[in-house]
Image (cartoon, rainbow over all chains, first blue to last red; front, side):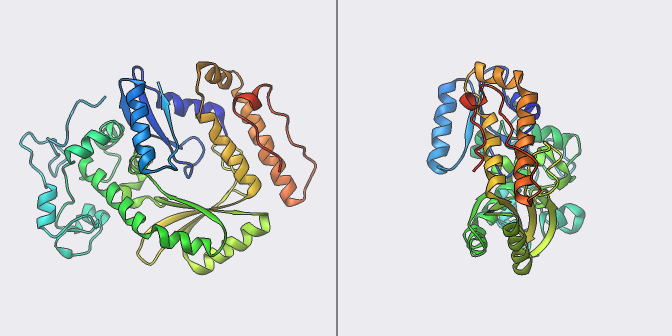
Length: 66
Length: 290
């Protein structure tokens, strides 16, 4: 892993305000695994959205950046 | 945050946002004989690419449903800019891109169980179909694909072998069983993006015309790849600061592990498992040698 590229990818997915729910696609090449699912004003809203998606797809890997 | 509701203002055929809700709607599309199949209206069997190149008589749906818009508005914000910059297939609106991506995901999903079973017959495998948001994100990062129909890895399959011979025999079996349309071999020369990732990638085309990616790698390569994802999980500012402070050292450790595993696998030897930077094990974990 190129940590600087990973940090840049995380930075791109981190909002200036609020929280982003970000998915991880581990079939993508290094540095391109992250994709934006949605933006939320509060962490609780992001956590709720994450829980809802996990109910639909228990294998999904997601992070909340903010 | 996006502040423009394209669902209420789809683009016309010239790519302009309309003020009167014009442009082909999902209803128009359905009336013309289209639907969720991704084929053009009227049953003429054209793909979206063919439609976009002028061969298609009817457009796919140009409007996003309010439900899709609510779910996807953040995801597609970047894609909207890429469309505006003219980098994707001309004439395909944002709503159409979303419709195509969802349709491709449905198509791949419908074939998923069979494809997975076919690969499992060759060797143990992991597999997944990309989320719609991941498809749209990739289209934004790599607009050369034109639309979601151009992506070759909406379905991803992974075969993990015991050793390099296992990779060779699995690749041979895949070539024997499937039509292989593209291939990238990072086994002996790691992916240039990070200088550490090793795997053998094949793009196959199934009889339905869908293209899928199969990644073939050894157990050791897989352990290294799985560990690499750990860096995306900093839970605290301290963990992020650790990553920033030790970025070069962790990257070097990653390359060292990859090279060491390759030396062991090829029998070349002469390497040893690198020592991880101090603190890495406690924060993000390290790659186990066996």
